[in-house]
Length: 356
Ligand SMILES: [Zn+2]
Ligand SMILES: [Zn+2]
Image 1 (cartoon, rainbow, N blue to C red):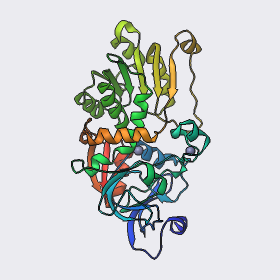
Image 2: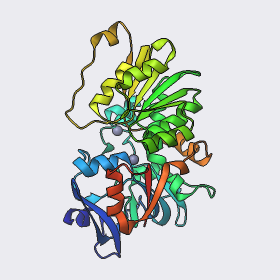
Image 3: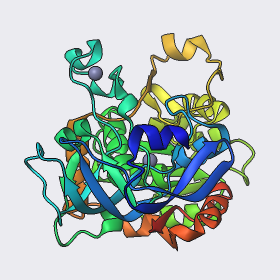
Image 4: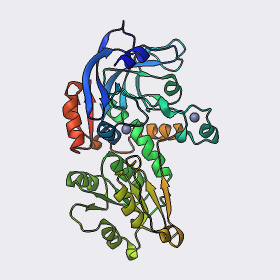
């Protein structure tokens, strides 16, 4: 707490409510000072925040990029309350949403154009489950957007995860008419489903929760596989795909080493596997070397996003190209954050909106 007050907040300022993360499985709703902004920063009154798989993982095991204590949550939208005197493009009263990081533009990776691998992405923003959030200068300059009237706060708050999925789709090498398997029908899997269909793919999606698979069917999945009801998900995919060859593209959106391994076994010769779901640090998988050599499969990891992908995700939201409302299955006030966390842990619903 001391840390937060000293570094980010002006103790003489007014008080706000915020969900503070102290360590794995320790989040408490407390009163803290409203953040104080510098000349190139923006203060936003949060109108909607969303839960995310990253929040779930972070709640259970912490995150190597964040040192507690900090305000929990990272997907949000709201109204600008105050702007620093050097801020040109934004003013109080604007409805805005932001991605949760921005590249530094001067490190080794930024100079190569690999902005998602920026060495200074520690400017990762946290603080969505609160009444106010301070948007740092790098994000104001690159990844803060004014939302049009016809877009709701809840829809706009999807910007960060959708940017990651836009990146993932761009790396997945999907061609018109391809068969794509998505492992995981959580929020990320369901965004992949919608974007893969826009790329002209027939999508098979697998999960262990019937509720999620039903929603996947509604959103256009060609076939669903309930992995808790089949003996071997890999065999199941082979059965459904042409000639038993496996899928052209397989996307892992779960983040478990065993599902990574299954995903690799589901792809056809020469196909692409996108291992998107981040696993616990230090975990390992084993791969049959012949799949890489004789079957020439392409295996890639996809992490985070670059500013171009954030812009494309923002356009998708503004132009209503995918169904976002279907992904936001519950809504709670911030005062019920502990219920929200319990539901998130129990995989209830898809995304939960938290309204301060
Ligand atoms: Zn997220
Ligand atoms: Zn950088």
